[in-house]
Structure formats: structure tokens, C-alpha cells
Amino acid sequence: MTIFEAIIYGLIQGLSEFLPVSSSGHLALLPHVISIKDPGVVFDLMMHFGTGLAVMTYFRHEIFRYVKTFTPSLVNLKFVGKDRFFVRNFIFSTFVSVALIVTLMPFAKMARDPWFIIINLSVFGGIMWFADIVNRKRAHHLESPMESGMQWKLAGLIGLAQAIAIFPGVSRSGITLTMALLLGMKRKEAGSFSFLLSLPIIFAGILKEIPDLMKEQSSSQFIILITGVVTSFVVGWMTIHFFMKLIGKIQLGYFAIYRWLLAAIMFVTLY
Image (cartoon, rainbow, N blue to C red):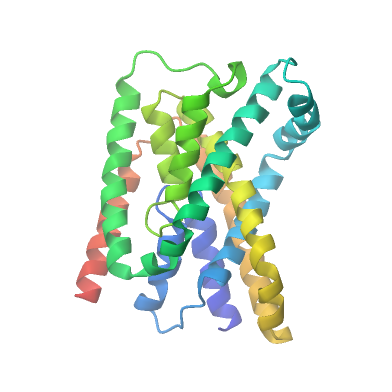
């Protein structure tokens, strides 16, 4: 892989990670569109590391506030307060994600087949559009549910949804937003929770893969890898800023249409 190709990967990851269009699906399909060798799951994971850093810097104030309440929230369950409830719901949601991801992981690599990605883009795009329509018609939305008390069902189902996104084409932000909207959360709050929820999974994956990654990379390949990570970080930060301003206004149906168009183009290309 060249530095230019790494920049392309980082650009696509940064643009698509926080939009409900599936960044992993885009990265897996890219070798079928241009003459480039598929760098594999580990390289994709490092591109997610760049966007994970973007989440940490963009939501740094919120993260710092939640971290301060982390230990008291676990040590003394009688402590209450919106930050402590958020942390507990966040932990439970992450636990559900990890448990299901471990179960589904053996099937994840097989799911990089382009035809499987096309199906995921189409089906989950339609479900997301349906959830957006239902949420917009709902007369009342849950008021800051993650900060108002333990939400076992809400946090658990969002965590379950995130786990399904290990299959390329589903979209982690798309499926978590879909679940949150179906359950009655406000759009902007659903977006913030979705972005923050990605952090434990991304960094756990990095810690798992980084020893093998360091063994396999030469100095020149490492520079190329870092180039991709930096690109995904910069573009990802700008995408978060853009999407958080639009999420309360724009209809998710536009992203569903994009997913269907991409699936159609890939169908014609591969057929």
C-alpha cells in the first residue's frame, strides 16, 4: 500500500464512520472498485482508531466528566446523579456489546464478501429510514433517559445493536441510531451516545491486535499506516462536528438512499 492509498482509506473512514453508511463496508468494497490489495481487518481497525481519537477529542469535556464519576458509580450504587446514571447505562450497554461481539466474531471475516455487504447496505438502510419516520411522528420523546435512571432495556438493546455492526455494511452509527430512535430517544442524544459507545470496542480491538500489527509492519509500512490514521482522525473530527449540527434536522432517509445507490452500483460492478 502507498501513502496515497492510505490517505484514501483514511478519508473514506473519516467521512463514513460517523455517517450511517457503514465505514467498514466502504473499506471492504474499495479493493473491488480500484486496483488495490485489500489490507485486511487489522488495517481497517487502525482506521477506526483514528476516528476513535476524533470522538475522544470532540467529546473530551463529557468524557472527562464521566470518568470522574466512574469509580464512585461502581463502588457505591446508592450514589445518584445524571452523570452516574449515564456511566452505569454506558457500562451495561458496552458489556452487552462485548458479549455478543465475542459470540459473532468467528463469522465476521466471512462477512467481508461484497455480496453480503450489498445486502446489509440495502436492508439496514431501509430499517434506519423506517426508524427515522417512526421517531419523527412520535409525539413525546424520552427526556435524557441515560441520565435519569438505569435503563436496562434501552441500554441493552443499543449495545446489542452495536454488536451487529461488526458485519460490514450494517453501519455501527446507523444501527445504534436506528435502535435508539425506535426506542424513543431524541435524535441528538442518540447520536452522542452512539459515538461515545464506539470507544470501548475500538480500543479493545486495538489492544488485541496491536502486538501482531507491530510484528508485521516494516518502518515504511508503519509510516503509511500512521498516515491513514492521521487522515481518518482529522476528517472524522470534522464529520462529527458536521453531523452533530445536522442530526436534529436532516432526515436519515437521505442516507438510506445513498446506501441503496451504493449497493446498486456495486451490484452492477460485480455482476
